[in-house]
Image 1 (tube, protein in one colour):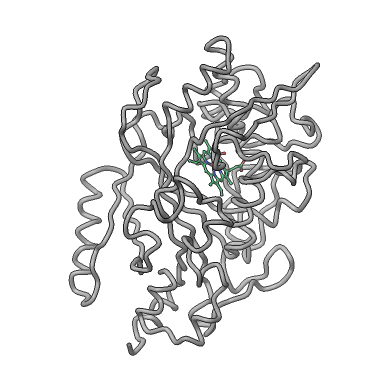
Image 2 (image 1 turned 135 degrees about the vertical axis):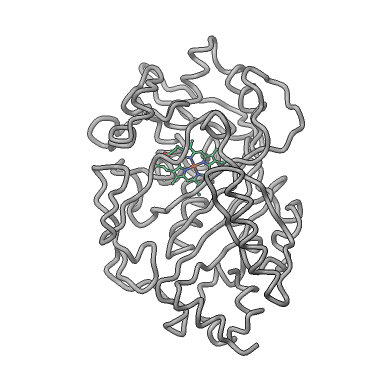
Length: 375
Ligand code: HEM
């Protein structure tokens, strides 16, 4: 539920005021913080994102198309029986036949463990995080209870989700690699240096010279690494690579990485650009991503504004995430190398925000409480 959604359901102003500022303002109002400018600015977003009309988000998941139809029918029955509810936006998403995202890289490998759930995170070297990092009502990594919306029954066991629809300029990405590499092998290496993983998912930290599909697929090994002992200076995985920025693990940075962890779920929309094609075919393709955590400000917003849209924390002031950052052909990407580093110039923009919203995900008791509100 969005802030406007909670309001429409009849939540009191006093209670609405107890939600954090970012949530109350909504994602569109946070555009400057999030780097949603230029072609990603809310004025360009798909309707109805950012208008205040989105009240509830529903994700319907299934292993195949037949099950999807059944699940959708259940949802339709529920909202048809509820007066005042209208579907104003839908987006079909699915995993691509390649099992990879539109840029050609496997995603969904790295996720944190949460203390007390018994479900291990994917990195055996990362101790599980306190529950309060992800669920309201429990102590977080600072030892405190995260600020919780009131009344208690509404906030407890809830969390926040930042939803983003991101268009990916796959042809521009391929052209950039082609223009800056001397052979297909060098193109693959440059792509992996910018992402931090090879297309198979194998981390460049563990396989620095070429892809290793067996490693990419091996769930017990493909996220089993840290940076500091072996690669603190980034000769294998550059400090500016996407995965190292958004989760620096134990690397030397300004700040504390554990305070900015997040749970991600992402999937693709649109047709893949066929292998080897370098010209844009005009199709809309990309990913829909959900970023979940109990602290919108110090998790999703911090990661996007400080780690993706800037490089101060790694000593590269002004340098952005080469893939997920907003670029206007003035940006650079630094690739540590011996004897001299490589610095690529004039980065074009590879990702365009098509829209997004901040949601509050209530716990079960809160849902019941909301359903009983007089409005
Ligand atoms: C279109 C834009 C994006 C693309 C194509 C992309 C792609 C990827 C890929 C291929 C991975 C590696 C898979 C894995 O380690 O699980 C990854 C990891 C990750 N991404 Fe993104 N990403 C995008 C945007 C973002 C944004 C905006 C954020 C956060 C604000 C983000 C946060 C993360 C995190 C936290 C990880 C896990 C890193 C780790 O634990 O090592 N990504 N992304």
